[in-house]
Image (tube, rainbow, N blue to C red; front, side, top):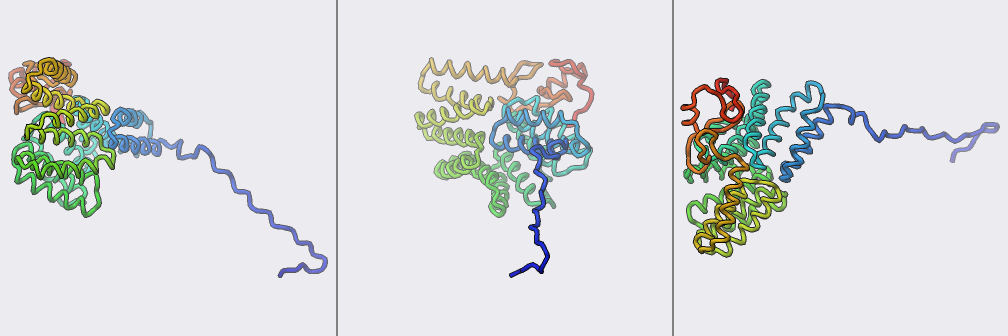
Length: 357
């Protein structure tokens, strides 16, 4: 017990008054901090397939007046913006953004950004059925790098090989990607690999192996909120039922896929749904339903501009070689060779200047 000496007064020590934290920290005034925050929001919404929100946040990033740090992030912002446009099936704008992101990667010698851009470009080319380009894009990426990028490149290789009908190569790449994803607990990649496995088995005609893998993929896709992935799973399962002549089950799956595709705004998925529904209703001679899906199919083609601006033929129906001009408009290669250097027929910009893509 402490006692005071005679004649000594003991006064209580007053606690130090700490300054209150500002409700608006200085970080919120830092352009670099804001850019990174908006980029993180954009990426989060991209993973949740909230593509319009992703576009909004990315545009906010690009409009920020920051320092060199913000400028270095512009490549990643352009990549996320391109992925969002790709999710909405707006192919020209997606290609423009990927070209910008690739330019940033080249200028800053950023190999990892270049890898991610090329994987996204591979996804775009596959959707446009330029199937011979995708394996070349990602073949050498990931070697000697972190396993994360190796796994990502192998998954994209697997998806490309499956589209080419090289199912053995597809299975090998997908198995390697899945092995790495399992080691690192990468649930989104696991879901994509399971989807790819299911597609490979379906391509083999092995529906009994495909369905359980679709179910496992759907479980993870639902868990992580990947609605675009869920749409792809539903269409894969519908194709399985179509293969087994279970038309009612196929239509039920396609209806669910259509609702989800409309919700996220993915026009290419809607086009595929209408195409498959058309096949079913044609086989049943249901003329009214058939006409409705044919009309919607052609509306999707028009909305996505999936036709060559020179010959007028659809892009993606045949495995024709395509070429993107620096303005990011896409045409049949044979049409461009005939057109020579007279410029893009859509926007009249010069076609002489080589593009990055």
